[in-house]
Length: 440
Image (cartoon, one colour):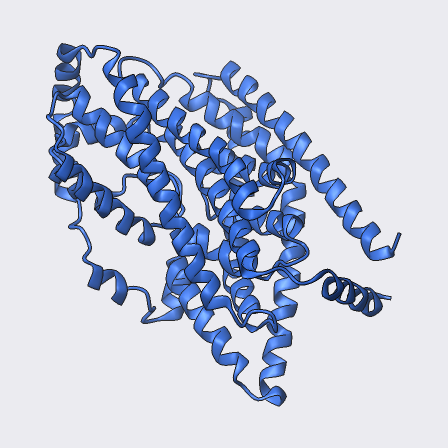
């Protein structure tokens, strides 16, 4: 066995050990957090601080990792088809959005109509949220047009975009910069290329350090969340959480055989690679925070042809929200049914098109009402107080949303990698041999 293969297997073994320990720490954190529910003290404050520190480290590394990794992928000698891979990723993403909508429309209506709703309780809850609904109405922003979205793709000020953590615009800059750098002269452009490749390699080392700290962070984050949010799933609207999370879990389960068939990846390999990013997604509720773990999973899962994943994954966490049609359409149908509003197929179709368009411009950040989607709900006939009420349960659905997003991102990367063409076995062996000779 070659030294290179030994190092690769050793690294994967350590990653798997960290993943298993992190999973146990996540369960232990939920148990401890449930026991601490309602108790404020130094222990809970310490756990919150440690968890927040780890998330901050992820956020610290996510933006430079996305920019330098994308640029490095664009200047790679094997990345001449990067634009085609991005287009293919977008096409697969749209297919997944439509698949999510089909799952909701097939499963939810018969399940929802099989159980009655206490309209008197809904009316009482609506009255108690009148002030919040008025505030939400005044804060909701108008829906963006296609022209606005296109104009907003290019950053007017790169430094300002970095300060605002505007991943989408920064990735557009990284793609254009990488393409331009490929045309620069070898004498001058080569220095910049070596600098970018060196920074990217250094960032991946930081990623491994952060992932090694995952077990302690998982315990702290799970304990903090369980202590503050464990009692919210109560009352009649808890049914909405079950509907929404159940549908997204069904979609996640379908991604495994879909990736096996379309991506040529075995169920076991895909499940093993996805587990690390999934745990980060559960603990942080942020797709962007899961980017370092996603990149590491992509490198391990697609080691023989990692270039497409290096292009697709930073793009995916920034603009791809696979959950959007599943969660958005589920929320719309539940609100229409709970509040007794007649459903109009044409309005539902317009709503679906609107949220698909808006899904390209939302960052993968946890929590908070997405005010730009409010007009789409209102146009479909949903009362404003219904939107406010369901926002109470957003922390729970956020977990499944992010879980679906990161699993979908890894699935898209695997499918794009297969259809963009893997190197022949002889070429791969020659590349491995060249890598070993450089290291020895």
